[in-house]
Amino acid sequence: MTITISSAFDAGNIRVVSQDGDRVDLEIVKDHMSDFYQWFHFRLAGAAGRDLTLRILNCAGSAYPHGWPDYRACLSLDREEWVRVADTSYADGILTVKLTPPTDCVWLAYFAPFSMERHHDLITAIAALDGVGYSSLGKSLDGQDIDCLTIGDGDLNAWLYARQHPGETMAEWWMEGALEKLCDPEDPVARVLRRECTFRVIPNMNPDGSRRGHLRTNAVGVNLNREWHAPSAEKSPEVLCVRNAMDKVGVDFAMDVHGDEAIPANFLAGFEGIPSITERQTRLFKLFSDTLERLSPDFQTAQGYEIPAPGQANMSMSTTQLAERFGCVSMTLEMPFKDNINLPDPVYGWSPQRSKYLASACLDALHAILPELKAERKSASRAA
Image 1 (cartoon, rainbow, N blue to C red):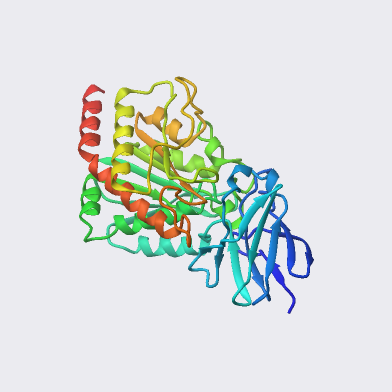
Image 2: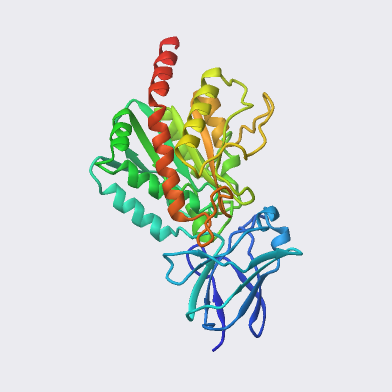
């Protein structure tokens, strides 16, 4: 039977370069109007029982070549369970995946995909629950809705948003876990959070890039997380509509959820280096981070990004822009494409389920710091 490889579907990305028997050479396609690429997702058919060698040739020029060493590709037989391909290696700019498919139709991806169809199912299911409000904050360049779910009726305004970078699909798996916990009527932590906070949850800020199979950009090649200082209707309406909605109600707590290609750990990036940083903001951020580290063995603080010097923050990013704009506690959560090196899983690596568990731990950490967050909000209101 002839081997066929296809990616003409939601979030698909690959190009066949050549085939020589059971060896297939491939390339990842760049984001439209951009040089970014790293995300791949394709179907492999007609190769049951054959010892295959798949080579992705252009990995050296990808957005994050340091993401390939020690990385293992994701494989699924049913598009529900995704396991790691143990025989994945990287050398001389080429990612090599060796496998023997047990069936004639298997799927491979950079990480377990979170399709736009699953996104719509998630929005529909959560919006139908009691106590949940839905709104479309605006339209993407391809005309897709920027979906926002509102949960709770407390005084603290908490924003959770994900997939500014569409290839970071673990971010929406995290969102699915967060929404399931927040909407659980019997979860005591969720009950208190809903009483004390009003959550506005945007599971996918970049639906165009998600559907197109992009790694990092929207429909016109724009990195949304470099647009928060000056979003525009022409290039970044996704950011513009979200930031406008934030301006209307304010922000006390914000978490921007991402994935990191190279660092094999979960970590937070903060707002150090913004012009008007306060001791209050710094203390609350550290309190949240320390609390999350105590609560979740999957979270750590030893590894992370370099902290900018005072006054040197990149103000085009959401976390820094929101901390400066609202004086709030904001943060970027990064999860690995590889695995948590401190608690590895040889079968699944970092996975959708572990992303959902981490979401639950993040909400537990927010609950734990609520007294301090509320006290600081009252203090700031009196000062104003």
